[in-house]
Image (cartoon, rainbow, N blue to C red; front, side, top):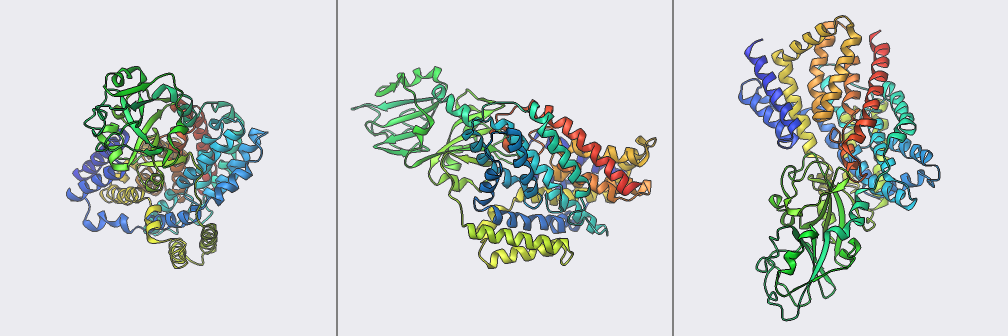
Length: 591
């Protein structure tokens, strides 16, 4: 093994460890690894930047805009809840939810779809007294099933497609992956309607937990007449740094102040709302001029009349909040909203809010003014998955125009009238010219962190290929699977890609595996398309953990799930997908 190969493998190993331990955002870790390879002389500047001009990556960026145009009204959500029917037969409603969801995710980015559908499905379940935990994991899985049906169903497919084009291959056709993914997806739906449905728990959602336990963490106090606190700021009154309580709102003459700035001055008869550990409420009793109300039944809806509003949000993979306490993040100052409570692993965290160290997948109950939901909707730090009030839908005409544009783009690419990239460019031009999308909206729809991971991973994959590291790994693969030949190698590649997808990101897993798989195919003298298809399916078929795929993470807290729920349902589903994919790929491309 020469120095260059050893250096590349060391950098890639360090990147993997960083991604697994979540020491920083995936984009930062991947780009840092790329920078090390550039500074180490392994990659030239042109090679390091090659991923930023990759056709697959650029197509993903354009499709984010197209998908955003389609979802900007509530038309799709309304259609889904109507398709689910009355709910008298839960399994029938489950099938009626999963089939159209899978169909839509074949052409739309699944992350915004799950963000859009989760509150609607949860409300549908609540209205029919059905546990949402029986529907939200299947909702996530349905988008994964559908995402592998087409070239544009998920960013991973397009990234592999872009790599294939760079290597001189023809790339995937629009529905080529469906040869494998359609039967696999149908088997997956049958599994979820039978064995999976029995394994799904019947639990309270994060919303129900917040509501039912509100009397355990909400308390209130009044500023008395002639109180020495009158005229003092929150900071001066000692209300900012209480040991276990957190001031989230002031109600003054019918008006609400939320979040509460430290410079706000207290007035006579101010009603102060606190969240935190009520066992420490003696703190408030010890403050002169503050009358603590006991024996009350304060409810969440009491917090949001008039100018204040409640919403739920899930901490995302790329959030700057991860592994920091709420106080360290200066949440109130940065987001202009207060955290009322935090839900994790099927229970509310019973600590002072400011001391809670946030993790990926935590569900936050937020309180802010009426506009804070719109301000936070474009944040990459969390997925805003519900608000207590009905959302205001956008212009339905623009949404319909977005759908027509999407269909036109699909037809142009399917019948090879235009390559996928050019069809996407034309679609985005039409959306801008018709004012269906503006530049501000486009910026909000594009997930820049995803694009940076893709671009950086392409450069790292190139380093594996150029130095011979990919060929070296491929030699070990071939030697390890020598007794089983191409079938064994294919199974090993699929399995390893699945493992990588569960512990890092799907796009990084795919990009790193593709050059290795190409070397394996060349050494075995077989059609590399077999390995490309297997990697595309394996990189998306992430069912066994809530952190391996964004859609699983989004429903994790809102559905009231535990980590073990994904293991019980996802591992058998992963095995099914592996068997179906390997068998079909083997007989279609390798026999």
